[in-house]
Amino acid sequence: QVQLVESGGALVQAGGSLRLSCAASGRTSRYAMGWFRQAPGKEREFVAVISWSGVRTHYAGSVKGRFTISRDNANNTVYLQMNSLKPEDTAVYYCAADVHSRDWYSDSYFERTNEYDYWGQGTQVIVSS
Image 1 (cartoon, rainbow, N blue to C red):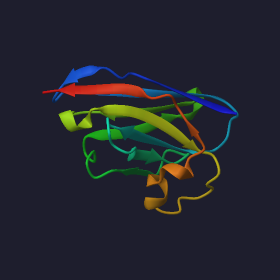
Image 2 (image 1 turned 135 degrees about the horizontal axis):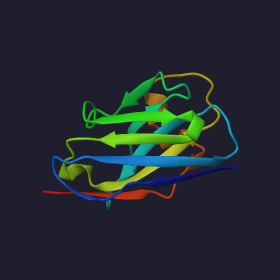
Image 3 (image 1 turned 180 degrees about the vertical axis):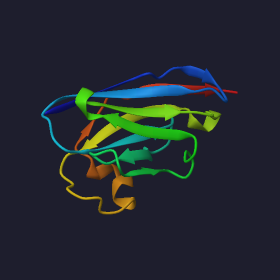
Image 4 (image 1 turned 45 degrees about the vertical axis):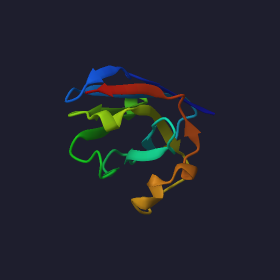
């Protein structure tokens, strides 16, 4: 009932910035939204999450201080601002929605991929050195 479409991925040099967007359509609900990424040959890993209200956020240690997650509920869009990009940030980035959680249970809860109900198709980010 929910469709997520990411955009904004590109090839960028190390130290540069990108802003990813995730547009949601379909059923409207209060849901937390997460960003994950998957590099070639690796498992999908947590990047950031934001509560439905936008008040609570949590980041992976590898991106803390460089990435910022935000959302515009009126526009049904979630963003990931990525600054000071590093080659190790190269991956396909996915947004995901958790439509069932009604509370901020814990940071670790939202790091688990299987807690999310809907996923976007992914957008490729390549950071060159």
